[in-house]
Length: 253
Image 1: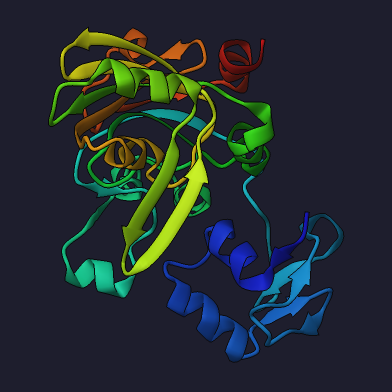
Image 2: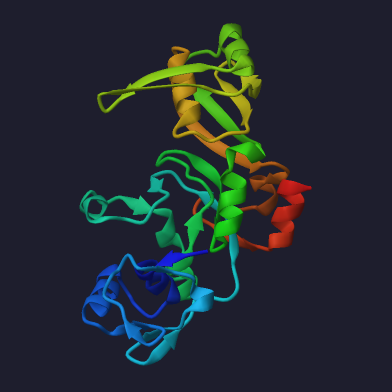
């Protein structure tokens, strides 16, 4: 798999910030196969190229790691940019900053995303192939959520969700339309249900209920396939290590 030069340098753990990465490249301190490269977007296969910083050879982390996080509310699933820092946003990645080595921290990615106010089951890993496999819509990986709504969930709404919802929403001045695949839903109470979907469009569940004239007030992911968050006794903001074998058994067997 090819990486851009700035991506490789961010993952290798030598640099403390993206600004340091860019400076090293632009200053001519980075060589690829002993040739200076000043293009941050230069693409190459790390397995076939030697990258050095001031003569020191750099490497990507050798062993992938896997974590299950009980995502707390109020955290976004992306690295914080300058605007988000000014707005005092919180990121799930900050939970890991002091708990793992810098090269691991720089390489972490979330397996899909939960929006800022959604809580619960979230896999975080350095394994890009696993991320692609789980988030590939053709794999139809099942995720189950506890959905609490503003109004009573009607039989008509249940029927629509089970058959597929025609979503039509206007956000930030633009119209987005799509139809969801049939889903499984069972009521826990008049305004709370367990919903299982096998796709993951942006803000899909919230948009489904909005299109059905109801609104989600709490959303908590409780499982992915056979891996259930409650089995790990994690409080909000806590995480635990997993093995690839555990994930394979629970998600793909």
